[in-house]
Length: 63
Image (cartoon, rainbow, N blue to C red; front, top):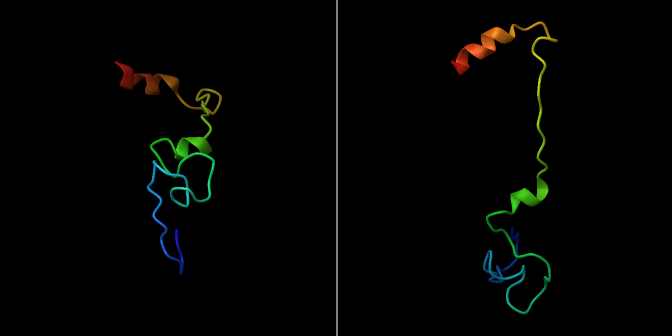
């Protein structure tokens, strides 16, 4: 995001931030997997029977 500044012409997914020959030696800006760098996969399960639920009702959708 540029606020009160000129856009300096970096091409997303091609050049580092700042454009060719300017600042930036790390990964390219944006890209298809940009958000995955900040995400952590986690599996959450709930024991329905322990919470007083009826597990047989949940199994009706599997038939």
